[in-house]
Image (cartoon, rainbow, N blue to C red; front, side, top):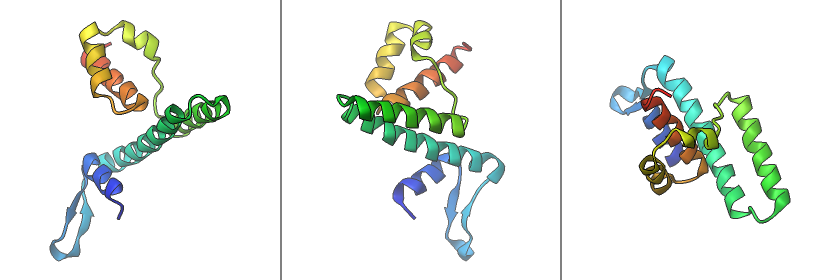
Length: 120
């Protein structure tokens, strides 16, 4: 199994049990949807990074934005409006997200999580 897939499975709550050849185990009702969401988010992140790398090309950036939008809609990965969301964060919170985000999608996720913490 691919290393990234293993990491995402573990992050979703699955664990690999070697004893008696059980294999992957976990609370499937909770872990499977989370695992699927993590895979889709990883795909969106990779597409977004390609958009950042090739953003000077209008054709590529248009296609990247279209693909990201379609993936989010297809898999019901919530969209958040960063401009509106950022208005509810302090400058320190914004700096923290900028410093820690690994890509634009991760920044959106961190922003959404921070707003949840603040009950916004």
